[in-house]
Image (cartoon, rainbow, N blue to C red; front, top):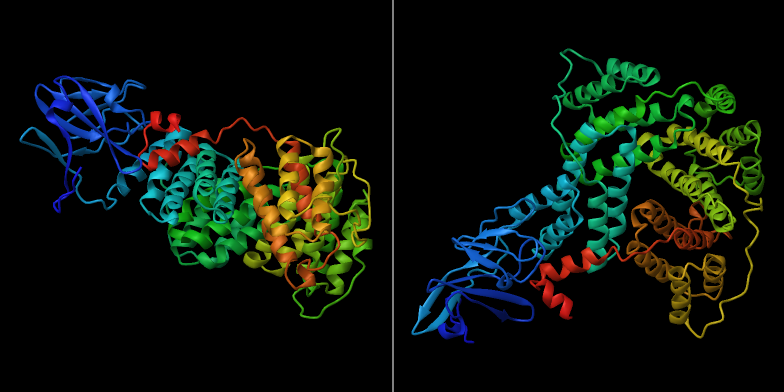
Length: 588
């Protein structure tokens, strides 16, 4: 085949395509073009069905309509328009027959289908179709559409989806999206597509129209909005909170909205509602990444539902804890945890009090370290490593309690976001919420140990780092939860790279069916491991328990693993975006 400057390409002889038949022509390494002879006229289209990639040369033509033989998607053979839902239009090419030779014009190779593929992504999100979502994202990435534009589309959908279809549990969807974005940026190619598609699929669903929220008629001062929001939060009136937040935004008080939400979330009456702090952290990160214009509906709707939720009558232990924390508010307000002084404290005594199964002792310990001025970063690190240590040592021959343990870890880490967006007093109150969670999880049968004692252990008996990584990945794949924790510890004891191991373990976890469940914890471990790998002791540098971050993650992912090759849609979407037909992929 010869290529002309005008982009006309000689592809076949007219005799190669008999009347009423079709022929596939391969261009380059992957792309396939379909030629059709209909009543003596030659048509040229992409041979890849825009639905799922089946070769269209195997389809049927009737009355100018080409119908795919696999799922029945139909197209205008001349213009390429698709008559079905969740299907892109078919690309067609001009044809010229010159002296019994068929020439087609490929046209400009520049990607020009951004809007079509974003619309396809929107259709997939509404219908909760994993293939359509994966395919649309793969095509957009292949066309060099910035990831931010793709995620903005998903975020807009999520805002309306939660506003019209979800209550406070919508925070789980936000968690999967934000953590998917954060983790996905650490990977490339198919791994990145996998995590983006997983995050997008996990937030898919109906997004119905709803009554427009409008601002309160003016004049309205911020002091009133602040006072009303706190009152409505205390009384469990979410709809009224949303209108207050909407009004604040349109009066240019947006910088005060997240601090106010955080201050409401850490009130004593919200003890036991850990998802409030977690979800607010993800909403704050959505604003950081995409701005208020893209995030406002999501923040106002979900924020109001979280803080306006009805709590019911607390059981005795929680009622006592609410009273204790309320009595300690003056201590919190008088504390100065942002001091630059390095204040040593007895970490093991603090940890012992937190897991003492005595809420009075636990809260007293939190109040004491705050009053002493111990840095918040240091206290949060202790909570993070304590949670990781519990994950690393929880018995797995019975209920390991992974759900409770991962919430402990993620809540502790989220206090860093709470401090950044809500301030020191918010993070200090958040410590009591983390302490309550440890008390509520007292049913877990985890032996108590001093956190500052070195873990010890042997070194992994392998010839090199590559072999060590393979041993651990094989244990995860074979569900060898009894040994994988010890192997990770021994790998690290041997001086091998924890960064590399974490990246490789993360890839295995992303391609497992439990990936949406693992995303928040994987993201937390990535970030906390990086902090503890630095030089600041307040962030865990040199701490004897930092290895437990990787040990706990490996045990968790191994114990809940249920791989059924759900990643096939992602792999196929990658091949689809390259122009390969389904048959080509199968033959590979």
